[in-house]
Length: 186
Figure 1: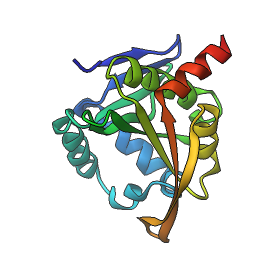
Figure 2 (figure 1 turned 60 degrees about the horizontal axis):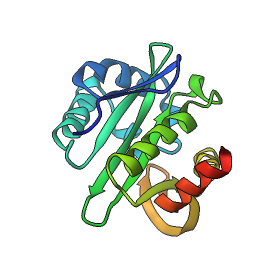
Figure 3 (figure 1 turned 30 degrees about the horizontal axis):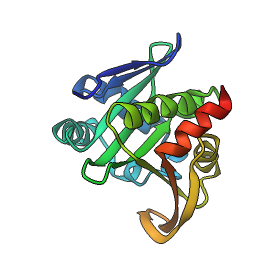
C-alpha cells in the first residue's frame, strides 16, 4: 500500500496530493510564473485553476504509476514532490519536485527527497531512482549531487520549453549506493 503522508520534521510534511490542493498549487504557479517557468515547462500552459485541477486529477487517477505529494512547510503550501513512472518489474522510478521561491535554501527539498528515496528503496523495493534536471538548472543538479546521485549523461534537446528545447542531465541513484551513503553518514 502506498504511503499517504510523511512527517519529515516539525516544519515539513508531505501529504498525498488531492483536489483540495488545487487552489494553493495554482496560486503558487500564478504568483511565480517567471521564477517557476524558467525550468518548468507546464507553467506556460497553466493559465487558470481548471488547468491545475485537470493535471491534479490525472495525477490522482494514475496513482498506480505515480505518487505525488504537496510539500507543506509550517502548514503552508511550498511545492510538489513525487515519484513517477513506477516500473516494478525493473525496480525503478523517477523523483521530481518543485519549490516556491520563498521556501528555497531551507533544506526542504533535500529532506523531502531523502524521505521519498528511503521509502522507494525500502518500502517499494526499488533498485534505481532517476532524477532529471535541465542542464542550466544548477540548483536542482546540486540537490542530486548532495543526495549521492551519479551524473550519468545528458539527453540533448529532451524537453521543450517556451524558449526552445533544453538539454536534460540524467542522474541515477542505486539502492546499494544509498545504503553505503547512509553508513558513511552514521
